[in-house]
Length: 117
Image (cartoon, rainbow, N blue to C red; front, side, top):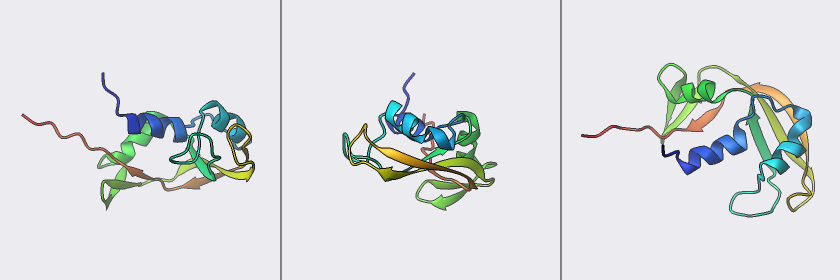
């Protein structure tokens, strides 16, 4: 079974069905989430979606999301999310975050598999 590395990265950075606003530091450290293109710079903002994989996948389908162009889909329903904003620190693992819970529509870059042959 081949799992797309970009999908794995997305799940690592944003899947958080049980992540609370108080768990930002711990989750980001445990998952080794860093600023894009770096190995240890603190990421300024990271969002965890409080839903399971199947609920999130629906956004890439006709019933759960609306195409925005460029393979982007916006959810038809808001999702509960935890937004972690960098409070202090520059280098992983000494990043400290402030978490905030809200409800937002999410936009996903979807890879649509087209069967050929």
